[in-house]
Length: 354
Image: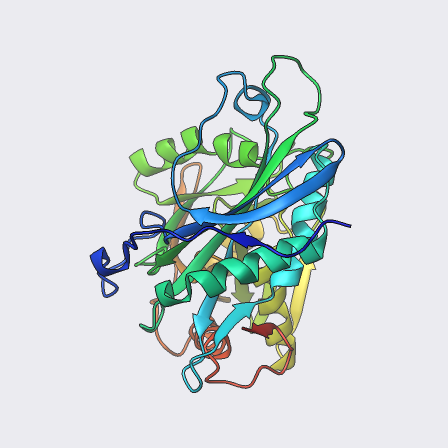
């Protein structure tokens, strides 16, 4: 059994005083430390917390050539009453991480090692957690292949790391999304349900094209007909039609989002019917035409809940109803944020207190 005790090598010069916590861009400012543990000789080695910084890598590092790289996204907040750190559903992220690892031919990391490294890192950099409403400490666990050789095979060595950054909102405004009708994010039997780096690499060029067309993100569709909706580039998607919430069903091409699952639980707790099914884009346009499409929104760790203001598909474009505080998504977002900071009861036992 790997020793869970993390060796901490603290920084000699904190960058904390250089940060404006009232204005935080997403993913550009990093906390003082990072957690690092290597996999070699068939087992996980000693874990370390060390100052955040660059690492030497061989030009032949396997992940750079063959894409064996996976990650997770997580957040933690301060309890507004006690000041304790509240981590949102970390074990679910750890379990999903290992699902991704298995699909990519990588070793699983014991959940206790994953969580201990995470908690030790948070404790080391707890002063980096923002207290402003809507802000959080974002945590990025990731793993990549480290064999210094050219050869198409699973690596024998890997590095698991966690870095953290204080963040503001990922999206400041509602999104206009363009439904994919040419490019594909995932096929059945592929890696779509894994949080693999390559899934996101494949989405970059179509997103550039979408932005040139006046949209913010791509709403992906199935690879065969380009009619059945899957997920947005950075989050799962929901539609509210006739007071019922619809979201694409998980079929191996869609990420099983932790926020997605949380939203479904919240909706059902509120008595809202949630329907997970294959959703045809024409159903959405028809619902808009007959006035039953009430709202659409995305749900993800970084984005939390982000409204969709417009949808484009081929030569069609629809504007959704105005965004107001009366929308179901606004209520859900307020609930989620309140739970995460201890302002609302954690009835689902989602939080880990540090």
